[in-house]
Image 1 (tube, rainbow, N blue to C red):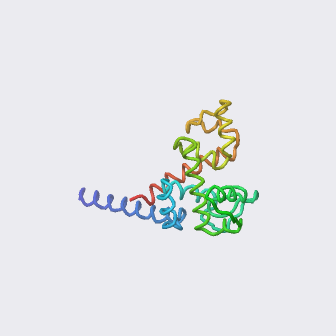
Image 2 (cartoon, rainbow, N blue to C red):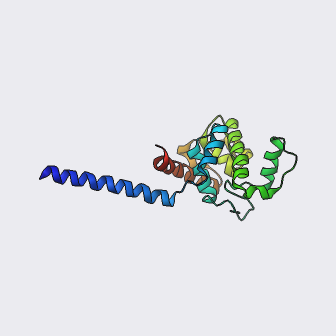
Image 3 (tube, rainbow, N blue to C red):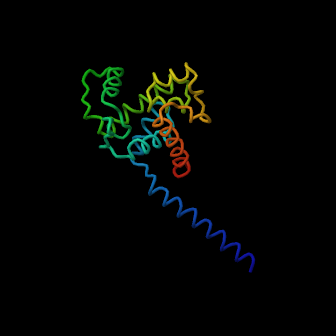
Length: 181
């Protein structure tokens, strides 16, 4: 009888875990997986971090536009998109391409990889720079307003950037749990 009760308990726990994953995937979709993996691989980025950033920025809505004018999956400002295109040697740039998922991922993943390079592959600093601006992060570190460490996120002077980094890190843990096999 005890073995039967233990077996039923184990089966219930397995069923609950499977259901939790199904529910989790509903609330944490992973659209554009193939493109995300492609550009993550191309730029040596973690695809689950890229997915977490996209979830945080646009909730995978390619036509998303922020109140400040950032566009697309990775919420790229038109001026930043133009700068990225210049860096990539593209002479023509139309901000409308930022609502195209592939173009947005190509430009945004390149930019994120540049931030990783600039900040010595530190994801906390790269994410803060993605949201708050590379110059601001450099100034915060230089002026010792922030240590740059995850344990000191409350030191980030911009509340929006502080929340952005926290949310991407949380979403990253969730995407790792739900999708990494």
